[in-house]
Image (spheres, rainbow, N blue to C red):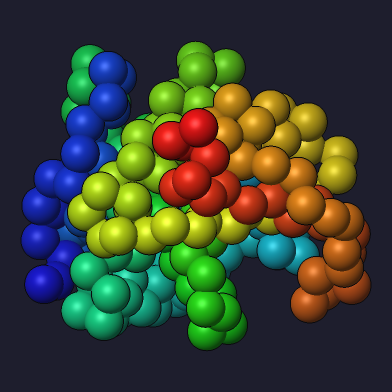
Amino acid sequence: MSLDGAIQFETEQLVCRRWLPSDQKAVYDVYSDASVARWIGDGSLITEEESRSWLAVTSSNYLKRGYGMFALEDKLDRTVAGFVGLVHPGGQLEAEIKYAFRRSHWGKGLASEVVRATVAYGAATHGLTKIVATVAPENGASQRVLEKAGFAFVKERVDEHGAREFYYEWHVANERS
């Protein structure tokens, strides 16, 4: 498994696929946008070098777990609208869902659509029974996305950068009830 662009799943508006080396520019474009980065980690903008190294990390995740971050292609124009993934930051045991979109794709319901599909993909394809998510207390839009996808708020905590965050969990048992 590598950066081969293999399709993982599709939604009504998006094709979710493995990264290609050519996605490095889109990774940089999305994560160097201050409006996007403010909701990620400590809010720092990604550098071009970091975007290149992220491709290697993602390829390693595909080899290790069969999943990682994926590119989201808009079905209408075939451009990269954003990214979604199941990752294990800092080696944590639980898979954590992460997503970000180009500002031009905000407000179209894409996050709600792809978060639900990614959770279903993680459970069906990789046998995940629990997926976690973290979100800034001020990011009401992402909180609503998670709740619509079946995530439950668990607690408020402080992240590794000293910032407050809300911690959510999704369990496969919730989907069966």
